[in-house]
Length: 318
Image (cartoon, rainbow, N blue to C red; front, side):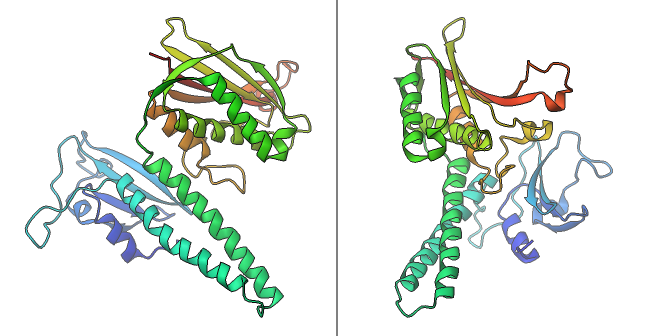
């Protein structure tokens, strides 16, 4: 891990809840002041009312937070004698993401100025190109992460989901050579009126389609099938997107909506998680499942996957 223990402690002390960081061997390497007086559920005499949440930090390291049913006192007071402001983990991560944008913009500006220098060597130009490419990729990750941590306030309205779907697919086909080769099976009704933020839902749809496109990238005949209907009481609209990619392993299927989780080397791992946040903000839900290869029922389940289906539920128009 590139972050020092002192930096971990500084960040952890911003959290009002007891929090600890563990290394790959499960040893506590950092904790905050609130954690030093707390009893954890897995310790002797632990409080049965407490709940521990775990967050993966990468390289086998992880953070554990102790959530109690009773409000916890802040570990210390500010110099003025007033309590420090409570700061949850999402606010902390959102602030870090925001602060990283300024140095990232400075890096991109400096690289652009250096690349305009006619006297720069060919090797240096190549290295600057790598820096610029990776800095832009990092900027994209920060953009998507910001949307995941703190999505914009939704402004719901009634709109036709079928029209929005077609507009989104046309946009992808105009921007991507891959999508120009995708065979479309449109089994949607003439319209599906929903009540949600159309801009946020379109961004979610684009991420869902991009994920499906990446899954089908190695299939010589990529095919996308769209289904949609209203449920029996007409209060919800159900949309399903089916691809004929490789599908998911059981572990991948359970982790697909986790942020930064991806089986693709160039993916940020934030597409489906950000789409889920937008759909949930509208009062809807997403789920994912494998499609079975019905033509080969004799094969074991590990080899019967012939794609995946992602379904989205949104509230119907009011």
